[in-house]
Image (spheres, rainbow, N blue to C red):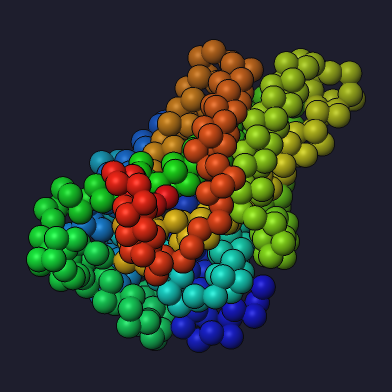
Length: 457
């Protein structure tokens, strides 16, 4: 897997991703402590609102920013987003009101909604070889999972020496270092040209009628990637798979503390252990998946994983209704057998999520031409976070009002329905797809043999 780091450009981009993730992890810990300073017992509502703002920015801002930035070379765009995030982190230690937190979080997440899709769309051009790109996707997944485990420990070590507001300075350092590493990377000329030309619509290429291509409006460019997802069956399947991942992940992120503290009666120190099981399952898959995908098609990995999420949530529903709260299940306290069972389910959900998320970039790259990759990655980023915006309230609000069993069943049904929709959209005969370069010829052949036929899928 580490062989892809021999490529200097990718090595610098991956290092930029890692240091930015470390900075984000420090900010996450510091933000929770800042919210408690400002709101006391109401800190949970502050963080919940901040999370909603984050998801709203991801869903609504990413397509608009991508449309506005279509003439900016991606290296400049990435650096500008990093510097904007650093500026926001620089201001967070000095806030004195909750509304200031909300404003800065919105700006921070808008910058992240600019950075992440642009970053993702560059990697396929830096590593055009399929095997190298697969390794890069696994390495990226591993970086995310490692950050979720290492950043809290790093923050805890720093908090033993300095106040929490100093953690925001670590965030600033992370984003500035990321910008420096992006500047030091030499991106492919094709990537810059695609960004500058805005893909197929703004590149100045001839239209299908032979005349110059008409420059699309801002609204049209904003919706270009969304239309792409609705028109390509495999991308509709990817969206459904993202919803299945969100169903399982939302249960873990929102309700781990409820299961550990209330249902099992265990200590607060066991909460990170449970979250670590989820991250550990994801990491194991990220390490093993490149070799698997050399022999097995993406479809045979991703679709069973979606059904696996539904099955694990069904097991969790049984686990939730078995025994009483506070570990009173006859197992000697501390949850008895239900504690290792919960860890196993959490690890399984992490592994299943990684089986879907890791190959997602491969699926996206194979489904669209290179000129459409920025719009496609932006749409995927926005729509996938829309899935989380739907799953979070189901896991939290439904769990609080109707109970954890009802929330677990609802999310399990959502995951099962998503898996069925993905299976229906992603037919086996659509797995093998010619290269994007052959697309015009295939369109012409289909039009000659079947007038009025739909565009290639």
